[in-house]
Every structure is written in C-alpha cells, then in structure tokens.
Amino acid sequence: MNHLLLPTLMSLRTMISEMNRKNLDMHRITKTSALLLLSGLSPNSIPGDIVNRCLCEQQPDGGWVGIADTMWNAFFLKLVDETGNNPAVHKALGFISSQENKQGLWGRSQRDTSRIPVSGILFYIFPGLAHETKLSLLENLWQSEKNSLTYKAAYTLMAFKANSYTPKDANLIEDTLTWLISNQRDDGGFAPWKNHPALADVFCTSISILGLLQYPAFVPPEIFQKSHQWLLDNRLPNGIWRFHEIEDGASWALFALSQLLKNKMGQI
Image (cartoon, rainbow, N blue to C red; front, side):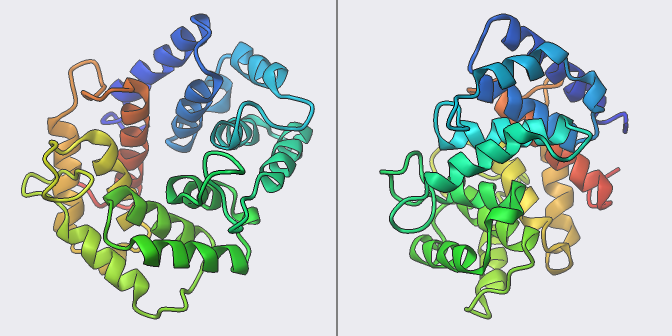
C-alpha cells in the first residue's frame, strides 16, 4: 500500500466500523467498503459483522431499499466473496434487472427517468448488465445531456470503457474527454462545471479524474498531475476532505488517488 493512501485508508477503515456501530444506512457503509477494496484494502480487513448485516437486510426479492443501494450492496458482497458465486449477488442482480424503467435504463426507481449517475456506475461495476442495446441507450442519454455536468461525463466514460463500447457517434469519446478537460479549474480541481458558483470539491474532482483515466492516452499528463496535487493539498491531516458526506468524498478520492498511482499519472 502506497504511503500516500494510508491516512485516508485508515480513516475510512475506522469510519465504516463506526457507521455500522451507529446502524447507519447500509449502502453508505458498503459503498465506502467497496471503494476501499478497489483501492487495495484486503477483504479480510472488512469487519465480518458488516457482511452479515448486509446479507440479513436483503429482502426476499433480492433487493434492499431501492436500485442504487442494491447496486452497491451487491457489489460489496461480490468483492468480499472469494468464490465468485454468491447467491445473494445473483438475487440482487435479478432485482435490479426487474427495476428497469420504461426507457430501458435505471433511475432512482422503476418509475423514475433514466439517470446517468445510476445507469453509468451500474454498467461500470457490473459490466454483465451492459449489453450493446443498453450502452446505446446510455449513449443517447448522454447525447441529450452532453456537456452538462462533469460527473455525468465521467460516469459515461467509465461505463463505455468498462464494456469496451464504441459509440455510434465516432467523435463522442473524444468530444467528452475534451469537454471534461476544459472544465478543470486552474488549481486542478473540478466542480459540477467550470463556472459553477460552488468551489471545486473532492467528489467532482475524483470522479472527473476517474473518467479521464479511462482513456489516459488522450489526456495531457499535466491534467492528472494538477488534480493529483489538488487532492493532496486539500486533504485534511486526518486523511479526509471537506465534504457533506465525508465518507463518500474521501472514498472516491482514495480510489482516484490509487488509480493515479497505478497509472503513474500523479506527482509522486
């Protein structure tokens, strides 16, 4: 484990135990845990009572509360299962498939409109759900919202790359990368868009970098270096960042930093 990751990893490892002790929403704990695992934490380091609680709260139809939390709970169970054949994961994927909306994608519920932050990340963590028709629908959805929000651009790029999808629009990936790069602020951070009145934040910065890292050959190295430095400069001494849902911002930042290090894209 790289020493740059340790302060955040240790803070988040403590945080998931405390959130579970307080009986906070399961998906907050599993999402944080999943991103810890993707960043290099051993599954043996996840408290067993978190796994047991997650399994106990699964409903007979395979879901938990809704689509988004079921997605993260199932992904967490997939990551901690050494057999790769967890029945709870299969039941959860069946529930998610049953919740497809009338447009053929997913939102917050079956009655909701299609949403990139749900469908995009779903296709990134569960590529098996993303056959060609679904990815084409995601492409159409991004075309309808193109150049709107940095994290939507990033989620779309992540879904495309995870599934080796070639858009019908031959210029779409390049155009999306160019737009996302253009929205980096001078200090290396990202907000929902460049001129948004809010300050750059750890969530938008981390997700944007993860999107750009899907196609690193097409991104100038200084883009990654500036965001890498922004993440380090804005990290507090205890390993977290100033963000409303502390564990969400910090866990995405940990994953982004781990991928920057893995791809040798930061100022190391």
